[in-house]
Amino acid sequence: VLQARVKDYQPGMLTELLYEDRHLVDGWDKVASIYQTTDWPFFARHRERMGAYHHLRSEEVTEIAPEILAAVDEHGPISSLHFKGYPKTDWFWSSTSLPRAALETLYAAGTLGISQRVNTRRDFDLIERLVPENILSQSDPNPVEDDYHAWHVLRRISSMGLASPAGGEHWQGIHNLRKADQRRGVLSVLSEAGDIIPIEIESIEGQIFYLRSADLPALKSIDEEPAVHAEASFIAPLDNLIWNRKMITDLFDFKYVWEVYKPKNKRDYGYYVLPVIFGDEFIARVDMKFHRKTNQLEILNWWWQKGHKPDDDNTPAVARCFADFKRYLGTGQSAVAPEAKNKTFLKKVNR
Image 1 (cartoon, one colour):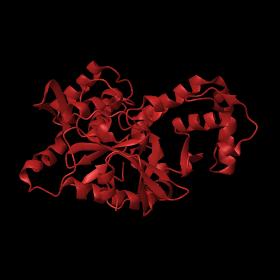
Image 2 (tube, rainbow, N blue to C red; image 1 turned 45 degrees about the vertical axis):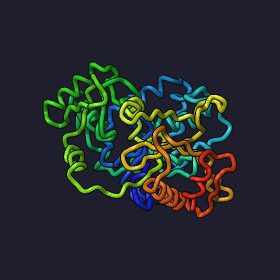
Image 3 (cartoon, rainbow, N blue to C red; image 1 turned 180 degrees about the horizontal axis):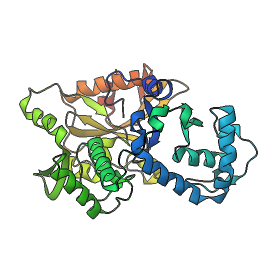
């Protein structure tokens, strides 16, 4: 997500903000998320609900949680690897060890935080060792649920840029706001307050969307400012831009499905295919694989979106995009797979 937005972004920048400076914190919003540490008090409701939900899932986990918490208190940052000889329990994705489930439960409730990540391993520590006391001691800034809903809905619209009240996973994680009628009520309040603006789109009949009032000047500036040189970006499958997949389909005629959970023989494109944006259009999809052992990027495939093809504008932009992506990965080595579609184009842009 950050690689597509921040020039010369490197993963170490996020690690520093998260686990050294602690300006950011691992938490939950729509899903597992990263947000500013100063936002911690706003998610009190979410942590309370998550903690209760996790505990209700397994009595075994609830029973062992104090023991796991005491171990963290004594030893400092530890992962599930610290605990040996414990049985497994049924958990969300599959069975897992009791200590790991207990760590996740304590983390979801905000009792523990993530001290650091080493590849896929998470080291947990007491939250008071990770988040400043002056932030932890703050009460929920929105004790009235209507105020909380207004805050979280406005935040979610800000995350997506444009929002529809229709149901979908883009509204997940907002406490007690599952029904469309409830969302419309909050959107109406925000609209009357002038915080958001209802938007109609010429090509999409019968639907109302909402834009933050604070974002309107940026929208208007598109027609007022001189045309800028368009650039290309690879968009991550979980990027907030494409949280509302139906809206993206309606707006751009670009239907995207993250096929990582599909069986191989049922995938239309590939395991981890990225949408490609050029300027203000989705122009293609790219399938790549980074081989860490050899430090080489393999470009497996490229599919042009209907109505798009290589030209003098998008070709150099995509070449710059590939160069940026390789710098992000820390490699100068890349190759186009022999069976790749549009292989001539890929060889041209993979310099």
